[in-house]
Length: 272
Image (cartoon, rainbow, N blue to C red; front, side, top):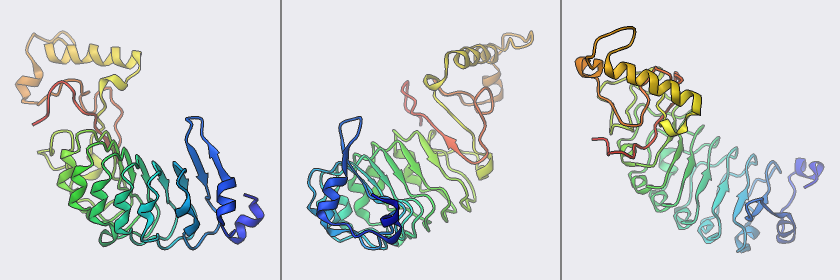
């Protein structure tokens, strides 16, 4: 859309929307209506049955239509940078969604419907920069979820159901008033850590060849107790440190992040 018109808040009609649909390199039909000063969700978009990806980010939308769930073709929805305070129940009908970005809005915990738990195909959910202190317990059913953004919210502790999201590999909890951090990889960390002390864990399959080699060499030295001419004792066993197959020891060759922690699913055996 022309920038001049976008600055004034272009009125989106069905004709304009259809002309704006573009094909992505992956073969999906994408409609981008970002940064156009839109204040009311264009209801004409509900008539589009062939849009896979919809970008309405950086607008001034305060409310989604109650029948937003009729957009069944959507697999990717970006609403970040608006003024949303709540989501309609019908959003749970968008079962084809794999990516949902709701960051930088005014959404409260009361405004999150329990129907979010119906979006079982979600792989990425961004709820950062809102006003959340809890999440619907129904979200425990989001077994496909890999990335979850909760940064810049009001959480004092993390929801316990996160430990059951077995495919969760990235969790961003920056800038929350957390009293302690609960571990997802172990079910829960026994030692209650402050947010800035959270460890950065990554599966060995994510390392480059050089880092993987360094990790294996260091891990072998530690396990065999031969580092710097040490004996054959197992330092992990002697110190009672719990180890996990495939996970790098925190604060070793893995990069330490002071307020972001990532975990990768351990395929070798479930963590109890």
